[in-house]
Amino acid sequence: MGDTEIHSRIEQLVGEEQELYERGAEGGLSESDHRRLESIKVGLDQCWDLLRQRRALREAGRDPGAARVRDPDIVERYEQ
Image (cartoon, rainbow, N blue to C red):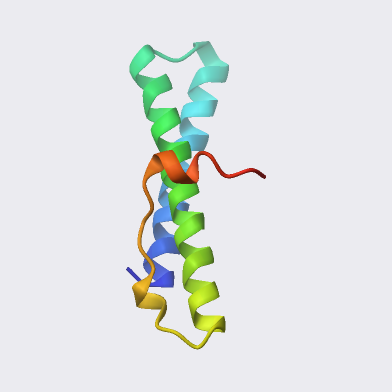
């Protein structure tokens, strides 16, 4: 997956996330909506991590295609 596709995926996830937040503000979310929201957050973290990996590889003169989506357990333990 290239940078353009990753950015498109991020935009898609952000749009869905905003829709869920708006729906929640209007009357609450179902349990499945809450689970989906958490899944979206993890997906966004994975996408941003993948972009950071690709940039680091590119800056090191290596192939950005070697970057891989990391397991949710890994990206969710990063400190901000």
